[in-house]
Image (cartoon, rainbow, N blue to C red):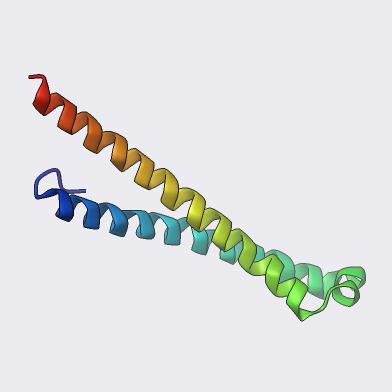
Length: 93
């Protein structure tokens, strides 16, 4: 995140960084969960016959959303703390 700029620019950059961080971890989780569900579907008859398409889809996309929101929120919190420390250091030189 750029240290300078107005508060609005820093907020916009923080949002973009949070989305980027969330997408990075979410896509990794999506890849892992896709492979796991695909392998389970191929090699485990109980899994293949026990879940319908909706259940398998839910198992694939849930990790994506979990890690997207978790890591995006952590990134926003980290940037908020940095911004607070930056503002506080300006108040008390």
